[in-house]
Image: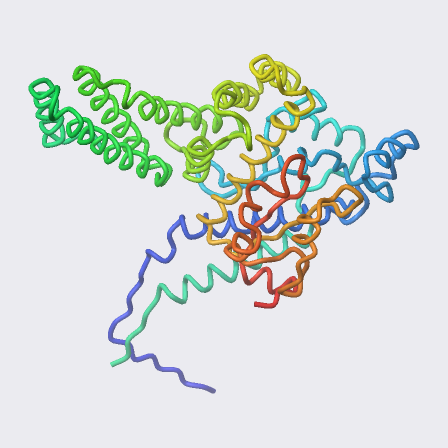
Length: 160
Length: 271
């Protein structure tokens, strides 16, 4: 049997290290990192769950893309780069963060967000539309670690 | 930031001097006015670009009031033209920020104008929105772009409006200009967010194919830290000045993302 005796004359709790803003910033960082990984996958033709964005371009699209100098080996949905550059990680109102597709116009004639949703409704495995399990696990762990760190920093015990 | 009594008094003194010494001292007075205008607008700009979000709308309102006060005094002194550009810019920036933010669903009210977007607007509109395009294009382009951002007009309509005031520019160039203006603005926003959030590493990604420019190939294949396309944020600016906002130039399809150093290391980044 182990006998534990704590001799502490003062214990201080510094609540400032647990401020909401600290965790909001972590959320912004993680959303940016999720978007960065998602963009990297997108460029390689991979959707959020790791499978291909689409089954392959049609023959007609392949001809058009090849004439324009674009790759045709896999579906990456990057023709002008406009849609690719309109998916932005952002702080959200009231704290936290989110990934948004802007509503700016796209050369297709639709808004970028409208085009994004239409592609998704047509069966494309749209990048960044859902977090991957890896992303979710990474974000969970980051918050767990940061909260632990903050709690450790918040409590100071001085022994006599 | 309402003008202090001291500043107002100072402006009134300058006004009196202007009337009394219209010939000999005129140039000096004008210089004084201009200096004062610069000082006040610089302060207002710092307030605008340094806003901290939810707690700062009052500061923003105050800065606009200050600018309006200054405008009234100087206009009365017959020097309105000097500050016309300054005054217009700040009000427009404020309105643009509100409008843009309500659209993308982040902070749709005056209580939350995220500083990153506001900073981006200030930067974009303080510089030349369109690369290598004459000044006369900027105001109509800016207006058309913002209306486009509001979702009220289509890409084709934005292009038509810009083309109407830029008839000597081929339509395909106008399309590229409009597209690039959006992409450039979005990149600026991303960079501002990255600075605010302490994201030190820039990660450039995008296609590497037959039409990729040499500069983009160089950037996305840069392996100075073990992972292609990864740089310290400052390093990217140093090695490829302007790339983080302008990319490789018109029609660039490449994207700059930002991550923490720790996360970059987990992906193989070598500090």
